[in-house]
Image (cartoon, rainbow, N blue to C red; front, top):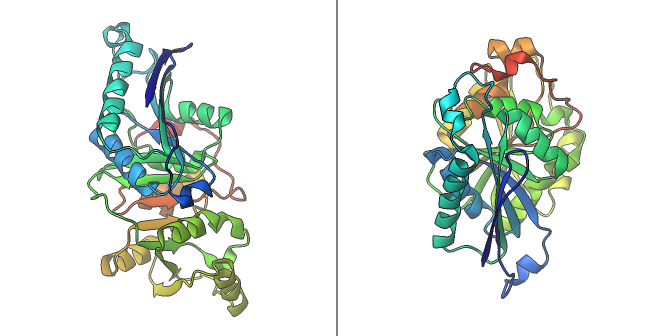
Length: 318
């Protein structure tokens, strides 16, 4: 294993761990490398998300990119005296500590690690990173109150604006194998089956049990028999279980199901509604990812356009 530690331009710090891929099991040789962007603010929540991600992708060739956004001088919450210190060095030292922790543990030979520090708001930094390089998923550690030390209430903001899949990992969740996956979405209006390919891949790789959860709320369209047949056909040879609940809202239905059934991963396809719904608390996605009880994987739907950036997006209540 070799470690690269380089200061870049514009406040960028890069650390890379490169490992030789040798003596890999047969299933590794048949895979495409997964690229994971893991957001860190050096909190216990983000550290836990890193450990969870390593476990979750233990059967996959994976490149983990740890990314930290730090505030610029225009940010009100940080004094000038704080910023006059060598921000690059301070964050680099913390990244080195994280990397050292990774090295001390048993690291899969098919996993690689690198890290970057960039100035700016979290949303801006992540969007710039995604524009320069594509990733399979962005992972964020979440706390019960929905806040992070540097990120603030960021999970809902990122899910609504990023054009990629995202996973939110609860900070207090024990790390264990993923055996039970629940896919909760509006199957009646689903037309782009390729959105579900990541779920199919995860289920096949982990040998997990898949449940398709439908929440019948007032005014919701019913799923036709032909639509259900298409869903089952897509997941072949996996035979998903079908669960249906009636509830006043989708969030209530999902909560009721999770309260009565074991689940290791909840998968949803967010619908991007208007600002009024988001700010009034009517957004199901906002409620699910703000303070999740289980890891939540949101699948990006290109047919549901993200919001344009608004000054409101930096406020803690969104």
